[in-house]
Length: 170
Image 1: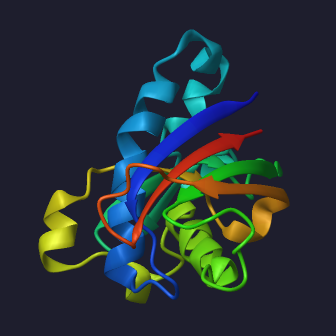
Image 2: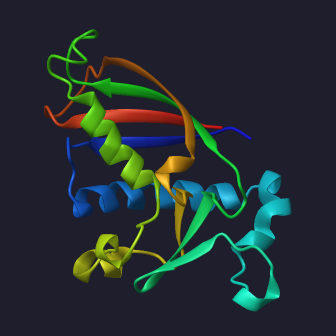
């Protein structure tokens, strides 16, 4: 079941916890809307938090003070393929010269997953901005089975850090 996510903003190389969580918060409303679509009806029961002793599967993970609803979950034993259109304010083909694309993609992958432990969970102002549950694509980024990246020039960039990402998740 493919769907697309959109992001416009900074994508830092070696982004910090705050950078990753701010991107995660941009994806949350898109994913929350996806869960409301009819094609997701058969999966809606996974959003219920079951007691551990029931044996039922839930895609809700508690990390710190919040729960994270992960569409691609290790508990469901499913994987995700990502096709990324990566627009940035530089010429095509300069992916290695000016891009540092590998570390920027690592920041993105971390933003697509839930925090893995309490040290990665939001605190202070970020915690108050974080919905409960917060919708994420992945329970962990090791569930990405394939990545394809196409880069091109973002013609109306406001600054050198701005990117536009269109991510097709299958």
